[in-house]
Length: 401
Ligand code: PMP
Ligand code: GLU
Image (cartoon, rainbow, N blue to C red):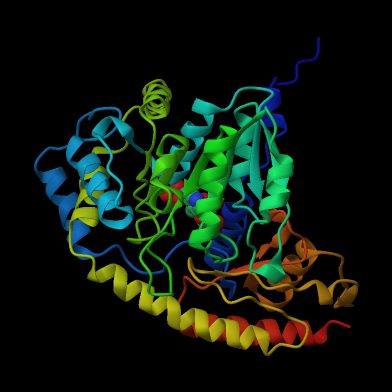
C-alpha cells in the first residue's frame, strides 16, 4: 500500500508569509556573499536601546526565568494600560489585556477567539500579508475592500457599508499602514467605530506602527476618537517596531473582557505565557524613557522624504507620501509588459524577481498585499543602503523597454 504523509487541508492551502520569505531569501543570498540591498524587511535597522537590554539581563540574573501568568505579568499589563491611557485617553483593566508572543500571535489568537466558520472579516486592500491567512486559519472568509490610492488609500464608507451583512464578524484596520504608510483621518476612524456599533461587528485595530508617524500628532485609533465603541474594538499592538524589538516577540491585545479572556484561553492551550525575560524588557520599553523612539522616528522621517522624492523622480513611478510606518508603496504598473535581459515583466512578482536578480535589490511584490500594481520598499535601513538601492533600481528600470 502506498503511503503519502497526510497533512491537514488548512495547511495544504496555506502559503508561507511572503514578507518573511523574501527577507529570508535576501539574507541567505547575502550570507553567500551576494551584494544584496535588502529593502524588503519590515524590521528597524536600529539596535534595541540599551536600557531595554539591561532590563532583560537583570531579569536573567534575578532568575526571572519561570512561567508567568498566561496573559503576562501584571506590571507589564499595567504599563500597557498606562500607555493606552497616555496615548488614547481610554481606561482598561488588567483583565482586558493579554500579552502574546509578538503582535502576530496576538492577532492570531484574537481571530481564533472571534471568528466562526461561515463568518466574514472585512480587510481593506492593500493589507498586511498575514490578515487573510489568519482569517482563513480561523475558518472565516476574508472579504476584501478595494483600495483608493488616489484618495491616499482611505476607506470608501459606502463601499464598506455594502459589504456588511449578518455574517460580518470584524473589520481589520492598520493605521499607519503596512504597506502604504497611510494614516486614517480622525473622521474616518470615527465613522468606522460608529458603524461597528450600529451594525454590530468588531474592529481589530492593528496599531503596531502607532508611534511611527510623521505628522507630529499623537497616535489615534477608533477607541480614542469614539470611546463609546470600546466594547466593539480590539486593539492589537506590540513593541517590535516602536522599540526595535522584532526578535524579542512581545505583542498585546486590549479589548472587551470576554474576547481577551477567550484569547488568553487559546494561549493557555497553545504557547502559555510569552517569554518571561522579554516581558521584563518590554516593561522597560513601555515604562522607560521614550527619547529613543523620537530619535528613530526622526531618522525614519528623513529617509521617507529622501526615498519618496527619489522615487517620484524616476520616470514611470508614482509614489504617495506615507504618513507613518517605514514603507513606501509606489505604483510601478507602467513597467508591466516591458522586458530586459530575458525577463518579461507581467506583474509585480516578475518585477520583484527582476530587481533581485538583475539589480540585487530585494523588495516585496504588491500582489502579496493584494494589489499587483505596486511594490513595497522598506526604508528601515540606513541612508547609504537606500541610496545605493535607488541607484540600482533606477538603472534597472531604465533598461526595461
Ligand atoms: N501587524 C503588522 C501590520 C505588521 O507589519 C507586523 C510586522 N510583522 C505585525 C503586525 C506583527 O509584528 P510582530 O509579530 O513582529 O510583533
Ligand atoms: N511585518 C513585517 C513585514 O511586513 C515583518 C514580516 C512579517 O511578519 O510578515 O515585512
